[in-house]
Picture 1: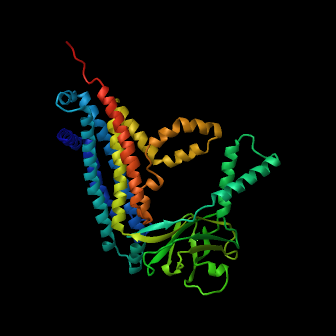
Picture 2 (picture 1 turned 180 degrees about the horizontal axis):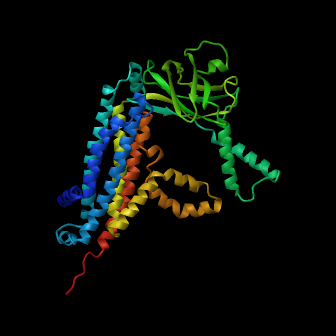
Picture 3 (picture 1 turned 90 degrees about the horizontal axis):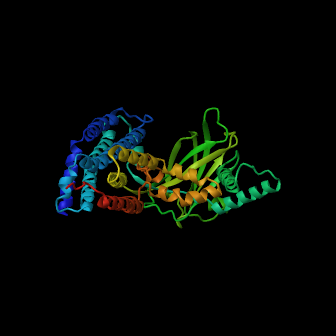
Amino acid sequence: MHSVWAVARNTIAQAVRMKVAVIIIILLVILLPLMSVIMVGDGTLLGKLQTFVSYGLSLTSLLLCFLTIAVSTYTLTNDIKRMQIHLVVTKPIRRFEILAGKLLGVVILDVLLLSVFAGVIYCLALFIPRISEAGADELAKARREFFTARVGLSADVDEEKIDTLARRAFEKLQRSRQLPETMTKAEILSELRGRERAQARAVEPGGQRVWEFENVRPSDPNETLFVRYKYEVSVNPADYRVYGTWLIGDYRQVRYGLGNWDSPVARIERTEPIRQFHEFEVSAEVVAPDGYLALVFFNNPYLNMTTIIPQEVQVLLKTGSFTGNYIRTVLLILARLIFLAALGISVSTWLSFPVAILICTVVFFVGTINGFVLESFSALGQGASIIYSITLRPILWLLPKFDGEFNPTRYMISAEVLSWQFLGRVYAVTALFKSVLLLLFGMWVFSSREIARIVV
């Protein structure tokens, strides 16, 4: 352990002397306070906070990822190139200890820098409301929708029903001999399923859509809950706005008639632009005693002349604090830094510095679009899908996931809680299993690599 720690200290010293490390640190020191001043978002306090924290964490994550790639690929390749490794391997230290020490040094550096700059962003976020000229309503809105942590409840999609409708549509096209000859059966079914999903979400003028939730348990019945959504339309209205009527509560009393009901049904009338996220809040009293909650959207035919498609509809319940959620978000960034450090150390055992840094950079950018890549492969035909499953899929699985639910800024923008369970899975798969696998491969290569040739 003493040898590993000695290598780690040397690696940190190497990183501090690198010009790229100094440049990144200076950039963050200058840009983060500047961003807190110049970024205004949509002009509201909430928009300013969301924009600053989102861009601040994104910038910090991006620059530290590049720094991690540069340091992890440089430290070993530079030692080999300058033959400094010859002085190390002659010591009573094993080669796997060298790699473990270098990884430890890079991770310690990441932890220190991430802690400092994440702390700067956190302090600036708390300071912004104090220096703003926002009114009491805006301050209260920021406390409710930003300085909190909320769990999002989404209604399950009936995939079996969608699949049944898609197969019926396929059989109808087959009987009428209208199947496209240029598409496979799997491609046609995939497109038909997409159409059925869109049709299931669409609300025509005069129609309504109901989302039902079970086991909704607010932490405090005196709290408020939020409904989050955005609108898509079949034809753009003249003013790009739609008029929506929402009912939220125990819809069973509306559906089944009068009776002795213990919870109210709230009616919300709203006029909002399309293709933007919106929220409204209601009292948690609308949740039925048995945990049932329904959300109903009505498309008023007298106010709307187009089909409305409510998307990404969620009910948000308060379930934690802003500070706790922020800490988990920072730890999610650290998980990707650990993976990139292990990747850089591993590839530098058998590649030169330019090639190693290129591979790590490509892996990083693929990780940022991992969801799009996997979705693209899922649309392949049956024959190509089999080939993909055997060849590319295992490789893509080894690549990191940095987008979608693995993107830390999404949790700060919407104040959505990042659970410890999800964070634990990320660390188990990305920061431990995949990173250890890469490091073991690098140790195997490095242990069998000829560092220097003995000349007699």
